[in-house]
Length: 305
Image 1 (cartoon, helix red, strand yellow):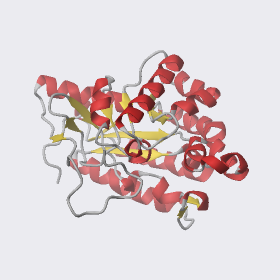
Image 2 (cartoon, rainbow, N blue to C red; image 1 turned 90 degrees about the horizontal axis):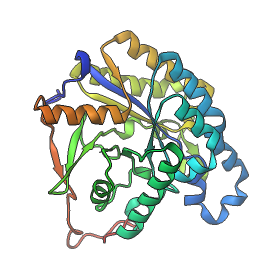
Image 3 (cartoon, rainbow, N blue to C red; image 1 turned 90 degrees about the vertical axis):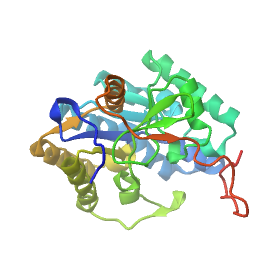
């Protein structure tokens, strides 16, 4: 089912990473800039993430001895220091997720570079080290992103969706580890009902979402793949949803043969396999297209330069 599966550490059947995008109020200020200060209910909903959900999620991870990856806009790192302290104290990885959750493919190359550098410097000041991984806000990886990540010394990206296992991104001279996920493993597509952001999914029980997540995991376990989920604390940190997530972890633990790891650990394993010759991944040359196709109207809000 999966061609050329990567060998996982200690003979594990699959790799699993619960990753969290702690966007909090960066979403409000980025996408509803002019009226953000007057949307108090929405603001309270987003603040639930760092103030209530993060302690709950971290407690759940401690129960299983898990150390995972949190992608956090640098503005949120500066704005919610208590949540960041708790994440770091428990040994979790903090990955880069922009400064204000700005979409890279809506920026010029120089604007994107400036945001990337500003965010990395903020993380360095807070954690003592530069981030090793990046996830583009809203998955908006641009035609310039790979070059900029390589120039800034990143070890991996986690924005794309091109495989069931790790692969490499190349700009023709350097490569970067890509750790893909899929929209089906993003809690936003399962739970979010927010008129302000144009998302009004029908309210459903957490068990329906977990059914999707578990089906994806069971297939990755069966065929030797990689399961990377994307959660938002203000969404899945609610009590019933967090409880369902714990039940999913219990299912994985009971099944056995699972390597729970941070994305930094997975990326390091991929590099080690490549360097020792024990496995060779697929390599995608980016960008896929150098310019818009003739005669095709461009998409609104995405830059062509």
